[in-house]
Image (cartoon, rainbow, N blue to C red; front, side, top):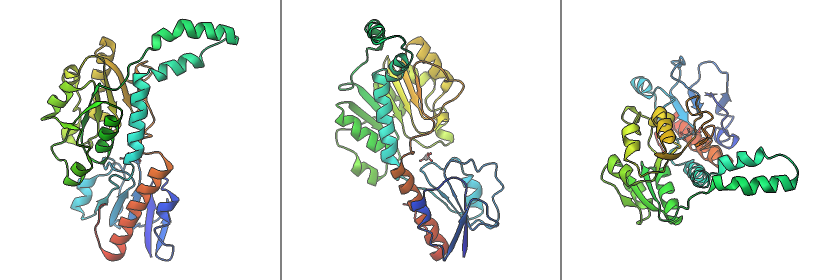
Length: 304
Ligand code: MLT
């Protein structure tokens, strides 16, 4: 009998891949053989010596001490691509929210008072503030052409945008998925200088921490929009606020609320919802549960 500890709610469809006759699954369990985790920060945890594998029900592994686990010979499995469609949809929704000033205009409507006539008058007087921009012909730069970046790039093409991508480590598999209309930039700076909209799809590692800084934001076309649905530390938030206040940036959309961004009218922040659809939660949980099961039962390592 293998013991599996869950550190977050893991979808039932995933847990069903671990049959009861062979697996005991619980959030509190002594000497687990494996841990299933979603976003819980494992860096400060004392990970028991009994642990033989860790499964991350998501793409990023920055909440897991991967290097430390490697030294112990403990594989960390993740679920690349399993939530890519969900993240793509939130990126697109946020891009449209930004370009049409939806967050501010919904807030304006929520605060309307009086009878319908008074509301109508206020709407007619107030709507001028919310004139937006259309996307066809505008340029989107996508940094990172993994499963999510490829989907975002292809979808933006379908919206009529001019799309550039950059990823020096793109896999052949992802290259095949990329629509041929997506142009390739030669460097991060080249990509950013072509972009009015910029969407970030790289993992958080030392090389990507602060990747989008004040200098790079200045390279963007005026009235820029940055979409960060990867990890907060990839974009320098102080530089974003400065650029928003200076009018260089039109909006910043991200999946990570913070005190620095709080209350800014041109920030759209969601509470780490990129992968929060029933479908994505199922896909991720099934993928990692299968990997953990195969590893524990057969010693096989498969990371897709
Ligand atoms: C990911 O890395 O794919 C996401 O952080 C998943 C999640 O929201 O749990």
